[in-house]
Length: 246
Image (cartoon, rainbow, N blue to C red; front, side, top):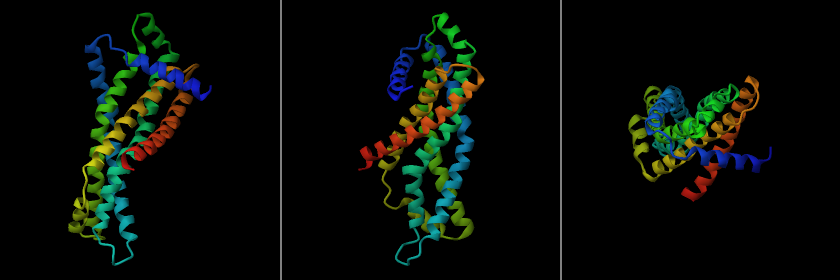
């Protein structure tokens, strides 16, 4: 299938998805479930990865400072900038594309091949809005909070490594975290996160919704969803960086 065909089908599905939910009570219940499933359920893996990202950046930055003219607080400054501008929003989005995206594609794809979606359509229910809209909305609400938590945990991981190894004093590390801080960096990360949240839910939903075949087709749809979501995240990341930072 050509790229234009995929874009057309995706656009039609999204237009169908964002039509008004038939019953707000059901939508609200599904939204709360998806916030817990997609967001809270991913907090553990996000925390672990963020901690070690901050720790590794601290060690690598410290080990590469060879000149006496580079102040030690550069370590904290580098950790802060790296976590806020790139690692927290983008790396976490790529991880969620694998974890959350594959689950969404598998869930909706299984419903398609088992004819559950057809049953919803026969009952007069807008299956796209019922199944996909709560997922997209939940991710766009909760993912910015996950990214902010990731930022703090990453910087805390760097602090613990600095304190435990002595490669840089904790006072210098904290000074680096505070040095020349601009809140726009956080806004920039949140804007990216909202776009990424849409991508990691909408694209897997598309592949799952149009799955054809049996269980093997569901697995293939999950793989395509993860690969496509990751590529689109990187492309959107480049575009947003050009628009917002340059």
